[in-house]
Image (cartoon, rainbow, N blue to C red; front, top):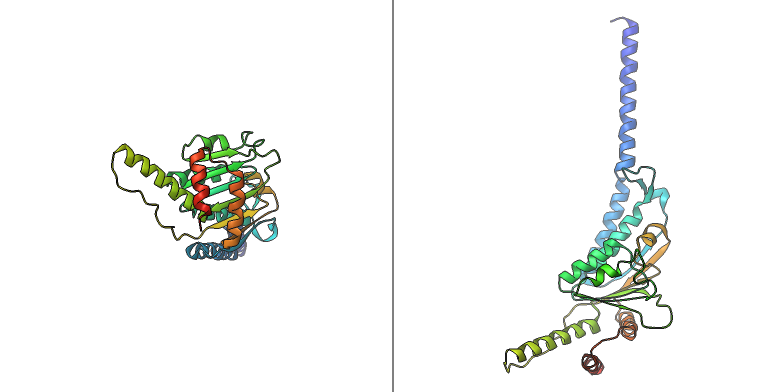
Length: 272
C-alpha cells in the first residue's frame, strides 16, 4: 500500500470515528436523559413513595423553568424544549392523587387537564367517593373537563353557589370527615336495602378506617397550561390541623341535597 492510499485510509477511519461519536452524543442529548437527571428523578419518586407508605407527608412540588440543567428535546417535535423537571412534577402530582383510598374532595377553580380527569375517573371506578366544587363561571367553558366528569354517576360535581369568585385550588385525600360521611352513606344504603328485604338485622356504622388524610394546596390550577408554562407551587401535607381546616372550608362550600342526610351528617360530625 503506497503512502497516498494509507493516508486516505487513516483520514477516512478517523472521520468515521469522529462522526460516530458526534452522532452518539447527539442521540444521547436528544433522546436519553443524563444519568444525574435520572438519579434525581429516581430520588424524588422514592421520597414520594416513602411519604405515601407512611402517610407522613410534608412536601412541596415546584413548577419552574430550570432549563439549563434539565432541558431535553422531545421527538418528533425537536424544535420544542420541555423542562424535564416539569414532567417529573406532573407525575408526582398524579402519584399523590392516585394514592387516594377512600375519598377525594376537590375544590378547584379550573380543571382542564385530561390526564387528571382520567385519573379521577379511574379512582371513581375503584369505589372512591369523589366530590368536586368548581367555580360556576369556568365550570363548563372549554377546555374544562367538568362536563366529561359529570357524565359519571359516581363523581359528584357542584358549581360553587357563592356569589363571590371561587378561586380555591386544593384537594383533600382521605379526609377523616369525608371518610366518616362515606360510612354514613353506606350505612344508610344498607339500611334501606335491609328494609327492602324485610330483615330486622341492625345496621352498624363501621369503625373509623385508620387512613391518614392529606391536603394538596397552592397556586396550581389543574390545567395543562399551568403545569407546562407557569411558575406554580403545591404544598402537600398530612398535618391533622391543616387537613381539618381545609375539610371545614370544603364543608362550607359543599351542599348536601338531601335535608335528612344533611342533618344526620351534621349531628354525627358534631358528636364528640
